[in-house]
Length: 314
Ligand code: 8YV
Image (cartoon, rainbow, N blue to C red):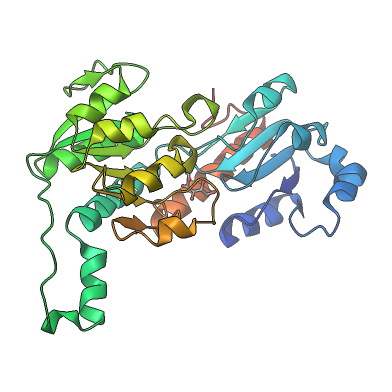
């Protein structure tokens, strides 16, 4: 029989996931503790599992405060909020929820690109504000025939590439490795790909290795007709450089689901008319969030049975 585990829940997960954890295990909620440090000092030693998500930091201090910890099970594919070195050093396994969100995140990335290139959000405001009677919405830009540069050709990048092809775009990609099973041209330099591309679609992992990989130089290379879509992490873009590039129109526009310091969006960004803003919701469908929750629960269930984890992060 699977063991009942002592599970610490780092922050609010979906109600269904929390209900399932409460029903099968002994749980505690870290975010509701009035004194987090005192709670961890008194009770931290009992938890074997930390159930968390991309918005909650699992840093070295938290891992050190949980000496019995053996599993960090995270809701979401991105693990940049987890100190993987500290986890490894303390012999803590980490799982995430890859694969199940690829289609919805890619759908949303193309939705953001269409919203930006075809001025869909602007058009909605235009009609609501009664401007249709006086004037016309400015023209947009066609996607077909343009070059779509995918930055990070993992599961999400591949799903974006298939959709971009269906829109008649030519796909190219940048990442640490060429993928030999893909027909698309590969670039080993991001500035060189930005120069060649009309659109940059960011679908790469966040964290130290990719911090500000999209900098002022990459934006300059993308050029005055270039469009940027980010469904990855805010930290992969130098946000100040992006605001400057959008304000000076050294790129044409951006559509952003992620930001440097969520949920804060700088006033200078809010003031721009060539950016579409979205509240980190690319995976946010009933179906995908349920599948992500199921995978998180399946990893914890495998751990409780002593079986191999479903989706360990390597
Ligand atoms: C989630 C995400 O909304 O999977 C990810 O990495 O950013 C999103 O799917 C987020 O992680 C929820 O915690």
